[in-house]
Amino acid sequence: MNTDKPKILDLFCCGGGAGMGYHLAGFEVVGVDIEPQPKYPFEFIRDDAISFLISHGNEFDAVHASPPCQAFTPATKQWRGEGREYNDFISATRKELIALGRPWVIENVVGAPLVDPVLLCGAMFGLKTYRHRLFESSHYLYVPAHLKHTIPQAKMGRAPKDGEFIQVVGHFSGVPFAQKAMNIGWLGQKELAQAIPPAYTEFIGLQLRALLMTRRAA
Image 1: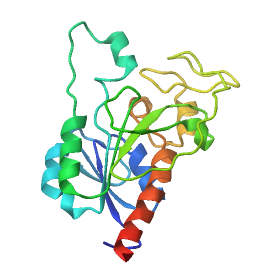
Image 2: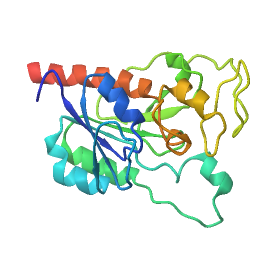
Image 3: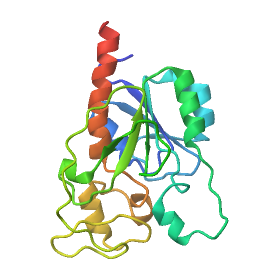
Image 4: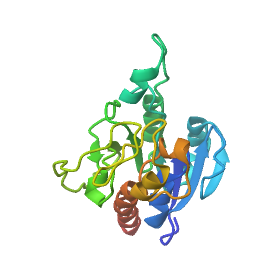
């Protein structure tokens, strides 16, 4: 492992919100997604994420995975047709991450079946969105205190007014506000609705990098 630039695999990478956080934490980032991601800011490989993990996971020092969340998000339940089903990629991803034996992180929405996850909130990092996300990990994760929400959110789909936080969900209004609120200026509406703020994975990535350095020094 390169002690200056450990390498992390960013699975189900979408537009690169998570990848940017790991980059800021000092990782070399490689993203994998089954769909084209022309706005992804780092090396990108179009492939099935789980298949790539099985065949190439040992080339990386650590792995982050953000499996599709449609099966678990409340927003999906509001508009999907009766009887429509979505695949649960979390269990299959976790199985292969454990088999790989490298440090790993799985991110998903509140309500997803993660095991002993921690929760991160935008307000922990001074962002103008709450955007709760869960993180399951192979190792201990420290998280900041989750303070009471005192600032109102704009109603879902509406651009925020002065003094409100934005909900970056679905076909929301206020893309420039969302870009600034999440510090993701390179993505448009569709990608932002799926992204997490880089501040989350920068915070986690710094802990992960310290773990890798400690293990290498042992």
